[in-house]
Image (cartoon, rainbow, N blue to C red; front, side, top):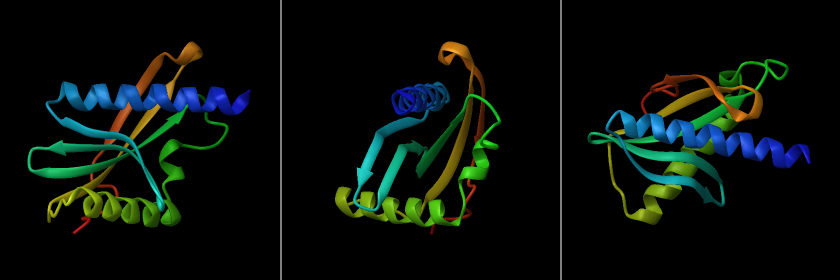
Length: 125
């Protein structure tokens, strides 16, 4: 039952992040894109830049800050999944960026806060 609740909160956070990006004029081109090497929560376009977005949700601080969950192992998986996405879609771009959106959820999945951290992995070029 805990896994279902965790997945539901993750989906709520991803929806909030996608809505946030759309409200800023971004085009969300993929959600929950799964590859053999990892998942990309959101793939979006910020003007001419392709942005791979990792969404991290927390309902409490018991497991640490959401951004702490994006370490070297996660970075390798994100970069590999991005390469897979671009190869599969025939997308060749030199303008790629990796952003993180942290979402804090309250009781019942209500949105408490959302923080967008652009280019957290440095240039993906």
